[in-house]
Image (tube, rainbow, N blue to C red; front, side, top):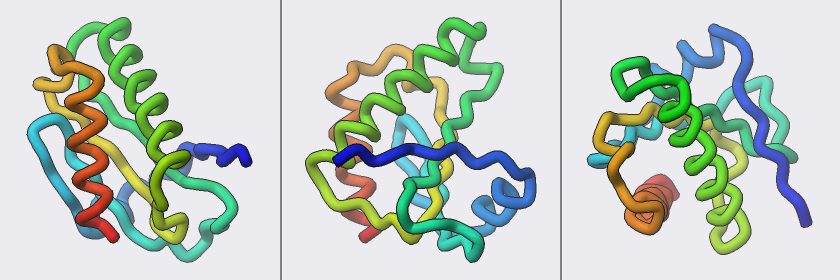
Length: 113
């Protein structure tokens, strides 16, 4: 069973997520909220990397890693599809190992449940 990750596209969705609940760690901050116009068939998730993280190559690498981590987490654990998620990365994520990032995100998702 393949689950699609959909990205948020409207500015009002981003603004409403920023007013929702958040969980933070040393690599990123996760904002989550139940949006009214969202379908429960897809996982609405967006990744934001700021310019202070580095050039476009580094920012895209971070986003690719996060997308890969999320696709793995969906397969092994239950994620609440009622919520929409917004990941805002921090500068420490560049030098972090893939496994460390994955473990911290799994811990954060356990807090969200």
